[in-house]
Amino acid sequence: MTELLLALLAGYGVHCAWTARAFGWTGIGPGAESDDAEPIADRLESTFERLGLGDIAPGSVLAGMGVVGLLGFAFGALLFGGIVAASILGVFAATFPIGVARVRHERATAKAHRSWPALIEEIRLLTSTLGRSIPQATFEAGARAPDELREAFEAAHREWLISTDFARSLDVLKASLGHNTADVVAETLLTAHELGGGEVGRRLEALAADRLTDQQHRRDAVARQAGVRFARWFVIIVPFGMSLAGLSIGNGRSAYASPIGQLLVAVALLSIIVCWIWAGRIMRLPVENRVFR
Image: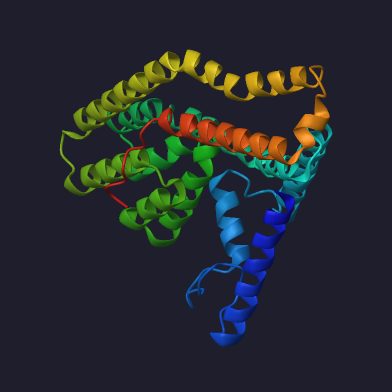
């Protein structure tokens, strides 16, 4: 199995070297890179930004992934006594820091967006009861928004102070938040600002009720998935528990280290990884498509 892996790596290296000389292709991809392709550093930075890791240097994140990957490799080598299974386990373990960061970012974002009904209601009260203009009420309510939303409101407020163009200010808000709820709220506020009239309060009240209903449905869906999410961990816990128990049966670790044992362990690890990813995907709640980009 090790010889096969080394042969595949050697063959791919020959492919990269030959295509670089014959066609001028660069990079480690199987094909030519597009001229307008985003640099790797920029792609890493944008990816980390989406995961909520924008305030951490990419090098630090990659170093953390490397440390966790080495720990996974060491654990696999001690448990299975072979490089193939250990390498698969090490690569899988290296993705855990990104996975944990993604889950934390998604939870923080969901928590922040649950504040939209209260924000909309506050804007409604400021406009209908205290007589604020819609832009003034929007930025005044945004100044008291959660941290995940406040920076976007502050950027939009700066654009308003510079240009006094409410449409451009809301474009900044939508671009900063990148969420369907923010798009709908921004377009509703812009329409109310441009048309005016006595329907502003009613429109905002209906919008707040609609967002509240949507969030309640999502909370119900997450609550119903609690048991399934708990059971998903058994995809990892049970096979590794059985692997540890196998060390005390027969020749144990030496059986894992044999060529057939390494092949079976590699297939089992890949099956576990596929099941883990597949279970995560089918449990992911649908994301509303952005209409007003």
